[in-house]
Structure formats: structure tokens, C-alpha cells
Length: 207
Length: 213
Image 1 (cartoon, one colour):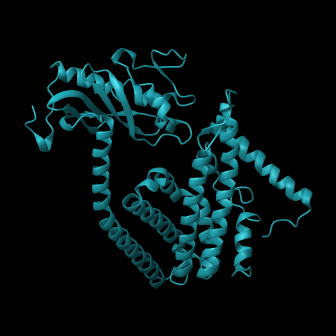
Image 2 (cartoon, helix red, strand yellow):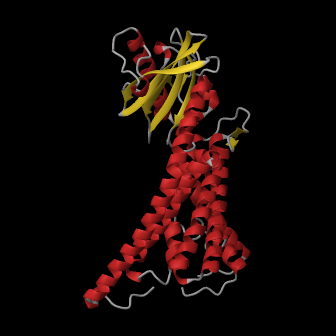
Image 3 (cartoon, one colour):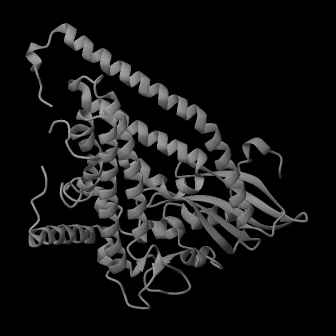
């Protein structure tokens, strides 16, 4: 993949549909199972990833000409962990309320394959502006995927949404909020989106 | 990104260049992080302290003074215990405790009346599994602790109302708060306070405000 020819809008759409981190690229599946047991967790994690992905992409794009290609992976890791630490410390100091609900997720992002993958595949070869839009698109794609997964898992597994109970006494299927249920949810949704695409006769995903 | 040369063709100068490149980038990264840390850590410290005082007050709103009376060690964490007074007469105690959970030590505050009956608990911090273990912060679950004593601080799965009902799928986290069987949790804290008050163990005086007794 060399410098992109896609427009900014296409880059965002690409991140949400054609190269959706979870449903298409099937990377960062660990967090997609680990933190999607509730809608709130899924959405907050998605927002945290959206922020870090965009900042990391822009930083890498800025630095792309000064990084020796042999040491690019350690440099990417530094940039990712640096942004995560800055976001973590900044929120802890100046946005205590946000930190209380998001702090846990921000720290987990260091180990996300999706962030590193976009730094390597896109930002290290593109200018700052397209890299920013790629980060936003990828981040929104991740957010959308986590929102859908956690919506179904919380609804079926706990009978509630965003912590608000909806069942009215019906016993929920607890297995859906266990890791096992995470595999079910991701697998079924992935199959569903692929089926939709095949049935719609849309062109195969852009590569 | 294709590699122009393979490793055998690298000269000493190439290696030196790579090393310098990496060292410079990491040094800059380190400096940025150090600056952010230096700027934020005092703010974080003060805000965390304020929040702690605020939390203690909320544990026993009727008290007009809450004094630290001592410290104890649980799971290698230092935790304080406090005496709440109103108009000079003690109205209760607050104990800070830690319990070993599934993926973290759950930090809890317990408010007790003078007869050592639990009035209220509050989970200060925990890193249990989101969606399962973090249900220990659910207000309805925390309300189960009201009126519990040493004998009834026990996690049960059969719904016996005299005890604490385990959270579905999160028995370990429920135990971390209630009784982790390792001397921690709310029960560990109440036990410690009972021992101190009955003189079984000597209380360790609070470091910076000694002479409260």
C-alpha cells in the first residue's frame, strides 16, 4: 500500500465499512470481547480508541520521514504508549469525572493491535491530514463495532442497557456477558455483516 | 515497507545511525512524558486527597469531625481507620480495607456505628472485570451491607437474606468486598477494629497526627 488516493470522506467510510477493525480486519478481538459486556463499557472504550488512534496516526505521519524503517516498531510503540500515558495523566489531573469512567480503558489501549496496525500500514506512508482522517474512520469503525456487540451482549446477557434494567423479571442469559458469550456475539455479528454484504451484491472489500 | 538491505550488508555506520535515531526519539519521548508527569502529578495528588476527605465525610454525614485514629496493613496496602465524632461524643468508626479480588485489590470504606454494626460501605477503587466484577459498585448491592455484623458478613449464593448475596458471575469480586478469606474485605476491617477496640492488638498510631488517644 503506497500513499492513499482516497478522499478524506472515503477514508472515514473505509474505516467504518470496508476495513472495519473488528468485522473485516478481525484484529483487536481481545478488547472486543473483554470490554463489551455492557453498552457503557463498549462505547467508552470505543471513544478512547477513537482519540488515541487519531492522535497516534497524526504523530506517526508527522514523524514518518525521520524514523529509520528498521526501528519503526519500537518508535510506534513509544508514540502509542506516550499518547496513552499523556491522556491518562491529563484526565486524572484535569477531568476527574471522565477519568473515573474512562481511566481503566485508556490504559488498556497500549496493547491494541489495531492502533499499531494503522500506524504501520497507513500513517507511516501518508501525510498528516489523510492519516488523521484514517484514524478518525478507524476509530469510528471500532466504536460502532463495540457499540453493536455490547448492545446485544448487555441486552441478552443482563436484560439491561447502559445499566438500566429492561427485563421486567425475565431472567437474562448470563452466558452472553461471560467471555464465551463474547465469542458468540462477535462470530454471529461478523457472519451477519458478511452475509449482508454478499446478499447486497456489493463489491468486495477494498484492499 | 520493503527492506532495502538485509542485515549482513549493514555497516557500522548504518548501525550507529539507527542507534542514534532510536536514542534521540526515545529521549524526546521521555522528556515529553516527564514534563506532563511533573505538571499533572501534584494536581492529581491534591485532587485525590480532597476526594478522599469528601468520601469520608459522605460515609458519615452526621459527624462533625472525622479523625484518623490509626493505620493497619492489609495485602501490603496501608489503610487507615477513623473515629467520627459529633459534639465531642463518638458516633461511629470508618475503616478502610482492601480485599483480594479477581484482577485487583478492591479498596473499600466501611462505616460502622459504635456497636460495630455496618452502616454503609463504599467501593473506592477496583479494577475488576468490566460488566461482571465491577457490579460491586452497584448501589443496590452495597445497600445489602447495612446492618451486617461480623457473623453475617458472608457471601452466599442461595439468596439467604441474612447474608450478602453474591453477584451473578462475580462471586470472587463479591468476596473481595465482603470477606476474601485472607483477612481482608469488609469483614477483615471490622475484625481488625474489633480487636483494636477490645485491646487485643495494639493500634498503630497515625503517622503524622500522633497523640490522638
